[in-house]
Image 1 (cartoon, rainbow, N blue to C red):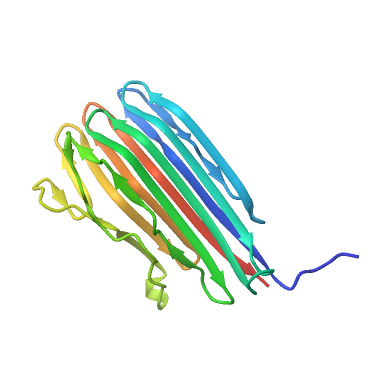
Image 2 (cartoon, rainbow, N blue to C red):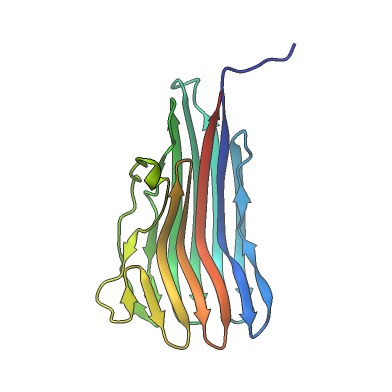
Amino acid sequence: MIKHSESRFQFGAEGVAIGGYLERPVDELIESQAATALPPVGGYGSARVENFRHRELISIKSARTVVAGRDARLHEPSVFSALATTIVEGLDIMGVVTADRVVARLTLTQKGDGFPEFSVEGSYFQGLRIKGEPISPGASFGPLKPHGDEQQRFRSVSLATIIGRPDSHANAISIPDFGTIYLAELISAYHTAHLTMIRVEFGCAVEGKAAVCAVGGQGHRIP
């Protein structure tokens, strides 16, 4: 006899340490590193990479990603939760962007009906430098405010603000003969959220895009 559960939850969580592509001086992909995703029924997944280097342009000493999700109805009725965490250590992008550690952490909690609750608490930059100068962006990493009406169904916000640099605006820094660096970008909708801690758009002899420490999560209750 086929058993039909009263309801189930479609999990989604993923993370990637670094990835992107180049257009100049060569046209090629920067293959995604320490990338993993959560099965739709929940569970656990992890990935790790050591001493990654793409040509002599981008390198990281180590990175790891962990995703997990579970149905906690046995302990607390109608609660589903998921987590995605990516940690990058020893980042160096063309000697311009460096960091001792970057952590992206996203949690999802579904209680009863309605939309999931998201939080990015536990995300942070450690030893972030631009051209050798320490950067301490003002950041707000915590629970995300729930969406309201239909007009707020989709939003893109910056969780970090760079202060005291004439070459910066909000969460972005423009470096001549390098490109533009964006910090702590969040894109969310009713059932989904994605956090990218560092995004680079190269604009010099090297052209292309790269993302560092990116995590995402989504979830749907299926009656």
